[in-house]
Amino acid sequence: MILNINATRMELLRLKKRLKIAQRGHKLLKDKRDELMRQLLSIIDEVKSLRFSIEKEFQSILESFMLAKAEMGPFQMEQELLLPTKTISVSVEQKNLMSVHVPVYTREVKGDIISYGYFNTSGELDISLIKFDEFIESLLALAEKEKTVQLLANEIEETRRRVNALEYKLIPNLIETIKSITMKLSETELSNTVRLMKIKDMVRSH
Image (cartoon, rainbow, N blue to C red; front, side, top):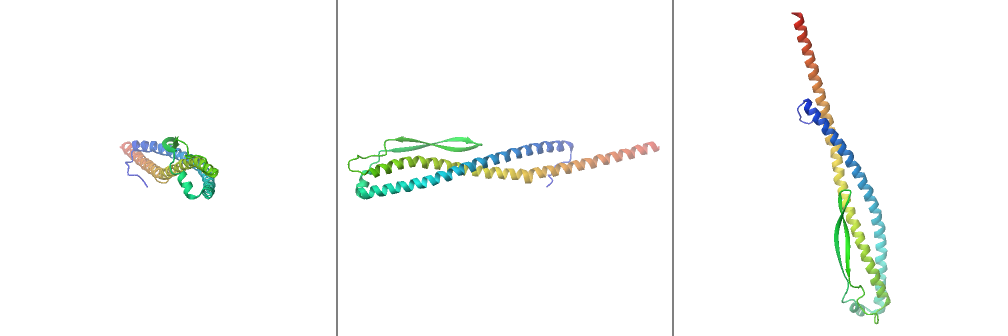
């Protein structure tokens, strides 16, 4: 689509400069999109691996708790776990990944996950809680990576839209407008040349 711009040499120079900027921006955005895709695919592989590991880990924890419950009985087990002594607080910071602010989760731990004495409890319960303690760390790592995937995917979509707007709309419009103005200026110049030649011939004939 030809832009509604006056066909002057000043406008032509301005459009050519704008076209160069648009083409440079298009290349930079494509490079950014490609690098974001590379980063995203790499993190997706990590997420898949971590999720698979977590699912296995969680199944193992459940089995350990079931064994502890069978050995101690549900009432005794509930009594031992009634007063937790460990607290975990999570702080969220950010890091810059290709102009995308992705989260970094840091946990602060206080106390011990084993809140009972060892006399009336099962060793299987100890194992369950220790596994669960490690499991929380894995969950935070997974949450961090999944949020990063979401943010990168959003940025890729936004960058893709900007690339398409430049590639299929702005740049073709600028090229078409530049061609149109160049043709009009050439026609005007030719018309002026013909008129001058006619005037010259008229002057010579007198």
